[in-house]
Length: 286
Image (cartoon, rainbow, N blue to C red; front, side):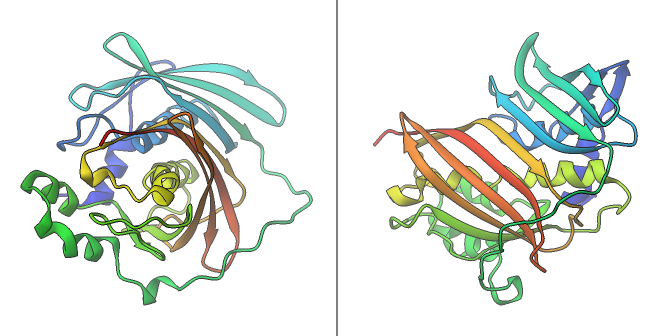
């Protein structure tokens, strides 16, 4: 039996069914819809399969319909432009004959230029923190059996929250959170496409939670409807997906049943390797 990270790598390894057409599958889990980070990662791989000798520096995506985990997802790539320095691709994800997601990505020939970056926040290091799994085990006995099983499932990304909010009895907190994360096993260092796709997958795991922290609610209650609406990423520097990275997240605004969230991803030695922005649906029904 493969472990969770090997399963993720297999899920990201799309089947080429025709020129510019690829097919992806979802893990055999009890989710009612496909995890958004999976679709972003698979769409990135589809785009990368049509690009040579260039690295993705940005992507912008919209979630249009919930994905059905029971059927494959077809990814259609439009080769929008191949320039001297930049390449642009548009990817449409299709299920049941309808678009469920689209992504625009830009790739660049590596080159040198000016450099500066924001400073990494000073927080506790991952060795001094309990894992997300340990925090979940503390409350698992208070959850319904099906939810407890979902909580305990193996995950491909290891997470250690710096300032966690309680899963069942959340108190209002500042709309800021910090987590350390990494892939649970080494990822081939020469596979930039896979590393970026894994980071894209991980970037969607906690970001939307940031905008609900001030309101003292939790998705565990069953009263919160939430879903990613769009997702954007900018890749600044190379990184190793299996080494600890700090995900600094904040939410400047929530209104109109939507929450806006931002994230900065740092290596543990302080290099800013990626930036993220996302808006999500947040509806609370007491």
